[in-house]
Amino acid sequence: MKKIKLHTKIFIGLILGVIVGLIFGEKATIIEPVGTIFLRLITMIVVPLVLVSLMLGTASLGDIRKLGRIGIKTIVYFTITTMIAISIGLVLANIVNPGYGLNEDVQAELYKNYESKAQVGIQKMEEKPSLKDLLINIVPTNPIKPLIEGNMLQVIFLGLLFGLILTLIKREKSELLIKVLEGVNDTIIQVVHIAMKLAPYGVLALIAAVIGQYGVGILITLLKYSLVVVGGLAFYTFTINSLTVGFLGRINPMHFYKAVKEAMIIAFSTSSSNAALPVSLECVEHIGVPREYSSFVIPLGATINMDGTALYQGVAAVFIAQIYGIPLGLIDQITIVLMATLASVGAAGVPAAGIITLAMVLRQIGIPLEGIALILGVDRFLDMCRTTTNIIGDMACSVVIKESEEKRKRT
Image 1 (cartoon, helix red, strand yellow):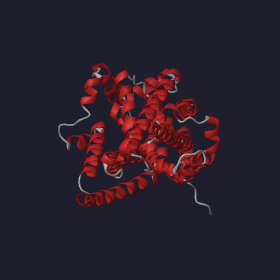
Image 2 (cartoon, one colour):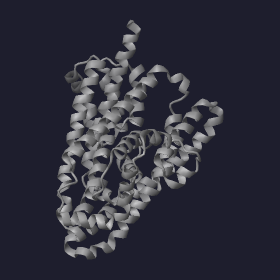
Image 3 (cartoon, rainbow, N blue to C red):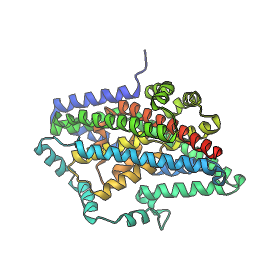
Image 4 (cartoon, rainbow, N blue to C red):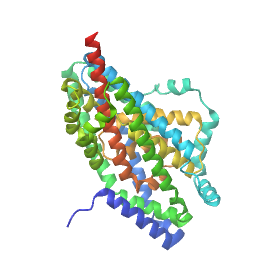
């Protein structure tokens, strides 16, 4: 018998959750603890996952002093495009308001049940810290405190800092620690695998509890949410990437997309940037990108470039906040941009990276993590779309870097 894939099990869990909720009504809340355990398991591994994977990812770049201008250009490019992507997602979500449209009584009941968590987000909006304070607070005064409190911006800063230090000291001194970190990272990833095996049951329990209390009205907005995510990804992919390839890479965008279509198909069907990586290297070679550029840019992109995932996180965060009636102020949305941009580095190459980093974003701005259950049922398809956007961004960057370096040689 053919083994049922995880995304199919999650979708089945979603459907069964709706059925159980409709049949048993409020009695369905008795199984909600199963979903809560799943969420707590995901939340538990966020801090060690980000810290360890960031340290390893940064250290794997080698001696920072030898990265040179290609490394700097690549990192700057990915950082800027990821911030643009999530900004597009936030703008679309704020215009379309995919989380609005629920019955006012349902919204009021939801807000009542999660009032204490909602107050966290409201309080942050009312306090209105300045952007300067937000940036200053990224640097912790105590390196242990962020790990205990789960302050993800500070955890990301620590991971980048110590990963950079590992590249600056002698290899023979850092090699032992890197091997230990690799072992810890492998262990954490196994925990992720275990957590995702529980996902179908967690989704079933959480959806059944929500439907039992509020009915199917809460699920109608999922279609609008999915359309906003896919529309945002398509807009970003075929505007920003086309502009960078055309103006910075000096290649006809239509020629570019025709050349890289095989990598796009692999990325879409596997939802894995790593699986598409070998094909991506071959595709860009057909449009004149030598391996000396692509062999550095594209693997690095598979590690730190998750512009499609960042856009999805922006839409998802606004969607879930709107579901629970939590207003997001300007500082909250700036925090989402920073978190999604930095977290995309920390969770790259990890199973269910989108869910992990979304949990980080929601936790940072005080949005109930239970809202993740509402989007898991459609997450597989959206993962296929955002992975395709990610890999196109990797290949577009290699084109831009190649043209930049060739232009420098000509002058």
